[in-house]
Image (tube, rainbow over all chains, first blue to last red; front, side, top):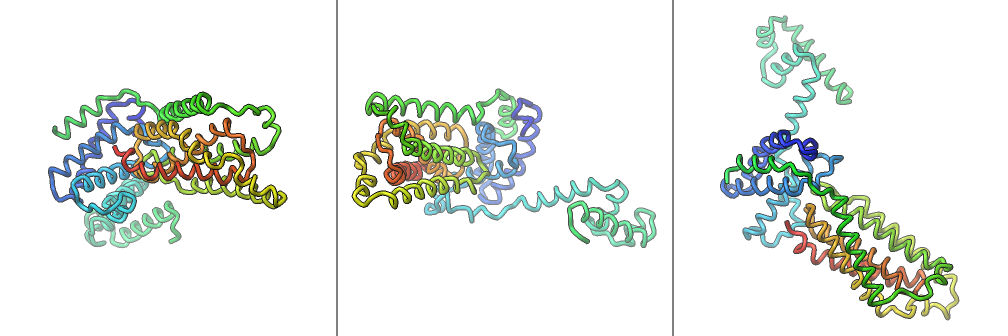
Amino acid sequence: MVAALSGDGAAYHHLLKLLTPHLRAYFARRLHVGAEAEDLVQETLIAIHTKRASYDTAQPFTAWLHAIARYKLIDHLRKSGIRKTVALEEAGAITAESDSDAAEAARDVEQLLATLPAAKRALLRQVKLDGLSTAEAAAATGMSESAVKVGVHRSLQALMKRIGVKP
Amino acid sequence: MKTESLIARLAADTAPIEKPAAVFAKGLGGGIAVAFLLVWSVLGFRHDMLHAMAVWGYWAKFAYTLALAIAGFVIVERLARPGTEAGHRILLVAAAFALAATGALAQWLSAPDAQHAKLFFGGSWRVCVPLIVLVSLPIFVGVIAALRQLAPTRPIAAGAAAGLLAGAAGAFVYGFHCNESALIFVSIWYSAGIAAMTAIGALTGRWLLRW
């Protein structure tokens, strides 16, 4: 978004493409009508564009984006007559539940994993994310079972240290 | 229209967009200019300006309204952007009012009883609130116009903040006409005028700030 604001059309195009599936999931989950959800995706994309000056580059982009999507959703619900009595200011509870937490957690994990050397990263992914047993991982990597255990343990410790958790 | 082609069209428009600072400068600057014009042409500046400058209450009045206007601006600036909160900035408003109220209380306690009514009502308490609202209106229009260019996602709060900013800036401008200098008078009637504008902003924000 920062690049887009300084006039980088290609980066902007990439960003909008990247956001669209997220927005689609966000609206689809709340509306249950595919066509309405797609309309809102487009409305939100237009809002992102016309209101792009309101993005403060010192603030998190996801918070800005989420607030716009939420505003568009509430505006739509009010227009279509659903929940007529819920004022915008009190509607926080409706949308307080985040559907992007899981995605954000997954992204955080990937970013953390990227800080490990390749071999350790692959091992940790197999055992902790893909659900392989120690024996399976040992067979796959050609290491001994105890070497797998030690490797996984050390990698986890290294990651915990990186995010400041005392083992 | 297909979402993909919409994205392509939006991405093709890389023209620089007006920065929020410029948007606010225009709306607020234009509004304050009109407010000054209004005070100058309709109400007239007070005649004893030079004489009044020697009294500290004259400066306190401007300091108070200026402080509230600054507090209003930093809140409006936050609420104009999605995903940000006014947060502790609201305390600035409380701090400015508490300071003025403390000064007013000190003035009340140190003044002889016979003076109290004069300090409280001054000579213009009846017109003070409506005139502050009147002078504030052009500023309110300017701030709302600026907000509409940006993206307030909490229209009632943003409207109230716009009213606070406009009311405080309007009271500042009105101070050039009004010849009251007692801090008691200012902290009651000026505050009431600013509060009235804040309420007007909160009530109308929902309709004025839709996008």
